[in-house]
Length: 56
Image (cartoon, rainbow, N blue to C red; front, top):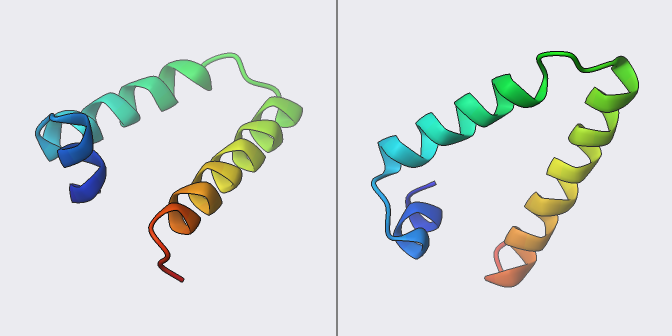
């Protein structure tokens, strides 16, 4: 999380707060299908992030 915040030039607390708020807003009227699609997109994002810096 610290690396992401540093790359975005924002405090870690602000990044976490933004993620929580956007996650809550996105799921307000979500269906199960929406939740599954969001989870799949999050997994894809994490795979790209891990692959981008060579970490495993």
